Image 1: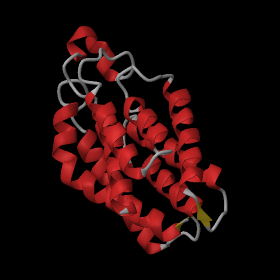
Image 2: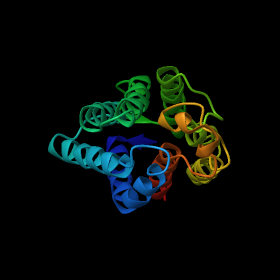
Image 3: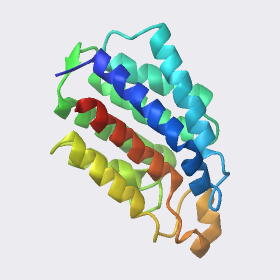
Image 4: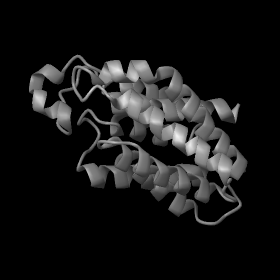
Length: 198
């Protein structure tokens, strides 16, 4: 069973890997976006870690809700609301339980992914973060490692896609050949989850 401390370690590990990969995320965002995804995510998750350290929430659901709220308030562009929605919805599904199972986490994240799709009006194949989130959540039924692998593969699979949503969609066929930065950062969330679960 996973307690609040596990979820704090997950968010902390996510912040660390995003900090390490911030330049790469920005490079991915340069040809098809605003060239600020890495810096925005870095700022957001730094704020998440600071908030969680100052007032550690008592439940897994509260950790995710707090993290999501912080991302919405500190990350610019579309990423803040999308990531915030993902975590806040997952946190709401987890409720006030002191501990949750891996399957309950999967259900929570699945609800969060659905909410992201509704907010962005997007679906898998549109070359968005959903292309990593959906396979990651699906593979979570098998293991944390499988989820990280599936999300990473999902992010790579966006390279040959033509963007149908977001700023990259304005480029039409010129968006082909670039990995979606949102899918790349989503894969990092699953990588961090697998890391703390070891």
